[in-house]
Amino acid sequence: MKKENKKIDNLFQKLEHQWDIAELEKDHNERFLNKLNTKKQSKKYFFPLAIAASIAVLLGIFVFYTSEVKSKEFQFASKETRQTDSIFSVIIQKELDKIKEKKSPENKKIITDALKQMKVLDQDYDKILQELKTNGESKQIIYAMISNLQTRISFLQTVLQHIEENEQSKQIHDEKTI
Image (tube, rainbow, N blue to C red; front, top):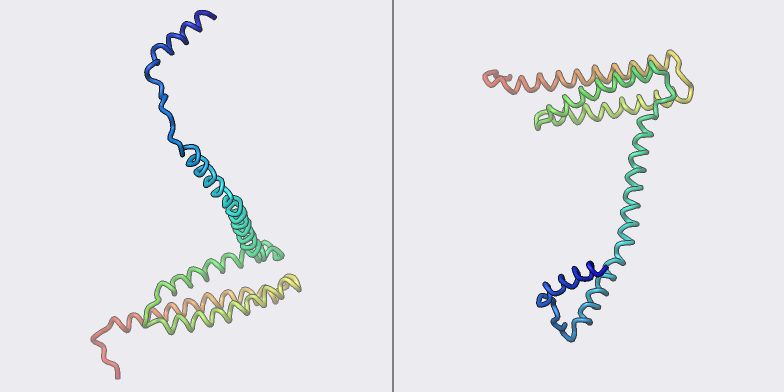
């Protein structure tokens, strides 16, 4: 133990003139307490912010959950009916995307009219789905569903073809109209 005390004593002897022994200013204690009090006040805002963040997270989860429920809306139908719907829906979406890519001032009226007509066809399709949900699958309802999907696809293809013809006629500069 004496050996350890000697080591500590030697350390203090080496550092003897390096200690900070300056006295603090008179108002040092007041400044320290003021800074300490301001830090405590800023912590008071943390709790309401934590609550707000929690609410935002809960709202995000709620929105995500409700959108997931909407995608599972068609679970009452058979596997074949769901597959048919998903295949046709993908084709319809691709055709809609093609039409939206062709949007220009010359084609604006054609596209807006086509989108209005698509809304009508979508509403008809929703009615068919509601009928399917309430009455179950029958050949008539399935045929009506497929017919609506085919009609939407052929309508979009016709609109796309009309837009392309319209663009080609604009490109021919030498042609005179009567």
